[in-house]
Length: 196
Image (cartoon, rainbow, N blue to C red; front, side):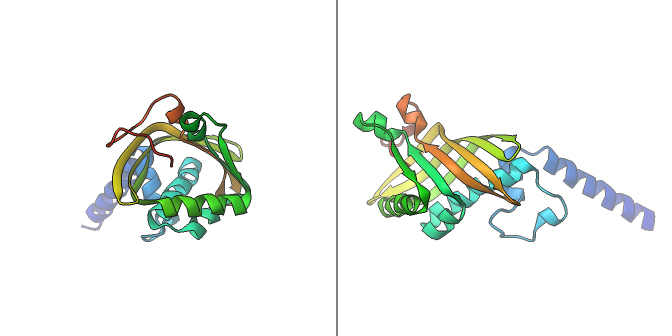
C-alpha cells in the first residue's frame, strides 16, 4: 500500500513538473505568480529567467487595469524611457519620448486619465535574454474605455520592451509602444487606431 501511494505521488509530481516545463510561455508566466495571488509555486519550481522577466509585463498590465501609477512606476529603472511611435504616424511629427521618473509618471497619469483598461493582455511573447538584458516583443490585446467609448484593440508586435536585471528583479529600461501603427498593422472594433 505504501509503495503504491509513493508511486502515485511520484507519477503525479512528474506529470506536474513536465506539464509546467512544456506549457506555453504565457501560461508559465502566470504559474510564476508575479502578482502574488497564490502560494508561491516558485518555492517548489524556480521560474526560468524568461518567466521572471516576462512577469514584469504581467505586473505592468495589472497596474494598468487598476490605474495604479505607483505600481507601474515601481517596475521601471530610474532613467527609463517610453517612446511612442504612433505620434509620428498619426500626426506626421517626430516620436514622443518620456524619460526619467517624472516624465514616466506624467505619461502614466495621462494614460490612466484618458483610458480605463478593462482588460490588457500581452500575447505571443517572444523573450530573449542576453546576460542582464531582456528584450520582449508582444501583441497587445486590450478592452479599453476611452471617455465612455469602449474599444477592443489588437495590435500585433506593437510593443518592444527592454528590461535590465536589478539584483533578483527585472526593471523596465525602455518601452517602444505603438510600433505596429506605423506599418498600418493592428485593429480595433471601431476600425481606428489608438495609442497605448
